[in-house]
Image 1 (spheres, rainbow, N blue to C red):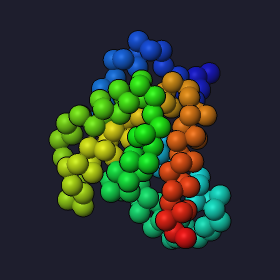
Image 2 (cartoon, helix red, strand yellow; image 1 turned 120 degrees about the horizontal axis):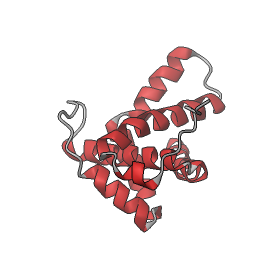
Image 3 (cartoon, rainbow, N blue to C red; image 1 turned 180 degrees about the vertical axis):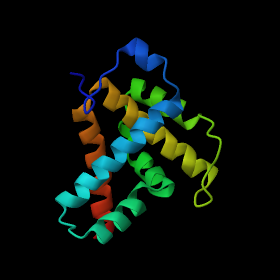
Length: 139
């Protein structure tokens, strides 16, 4: 049986994916990690979970998150990030600027790439930096 929860692609298969394809899977990974963090933090009602998730996964919040992890990226990760940032999506939401959306797409591309490489520890490492920066801002 194929493991759809932990798909791992070869380097050749990953190399054939566009930045927007990586961002597609990375968007889901980032949102799932955010939902997991919120539940772990003790948010219990569906209404509060949903509204807080929406706040944290929007383009402007992902842009801020990208700024926190960018200095920590390896050369290989920086290349994936740049590839995602330079992607040309067909539309940009009215709620964000072109620059914010580019950085959000870059972060999602990176998260998608790490997920498909099976680099779960690195995903958690980077997400922890993002979560800790949010906690520090809340204080």
